[in-house]
Length: 71
Image 1 (cartoon, rainbow, N blue to C red):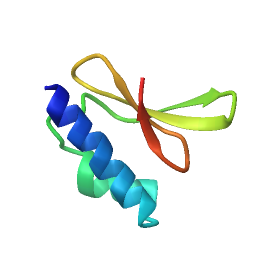
Image 2 (cartoon, rainbow, N blue to C red):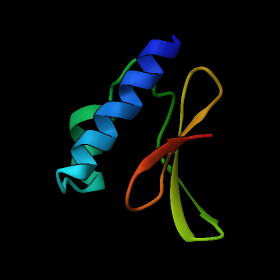
Image 3 (cartoon, rainbow, N blue to C red):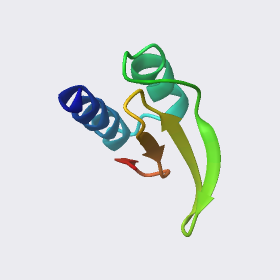
Image 4 (cartoon, rainbow, N blue to C red):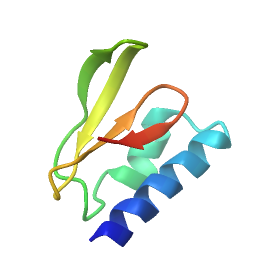
């Protein structure tokens, strides 16, 4: 499971580094991925707006505008 999540994180960050926008990453990579548990949820952190995508392992894939991270 950890490998799937790590690979998902890498794939999302690779696409983002190519300039791909979030809606495209959602459509092409995240939507329907076996690790993704639900729809993105909007939130805020100290740097501004974020999107949190729930994963089946209880973690979140967090889109910070410039990159993705895990929480």
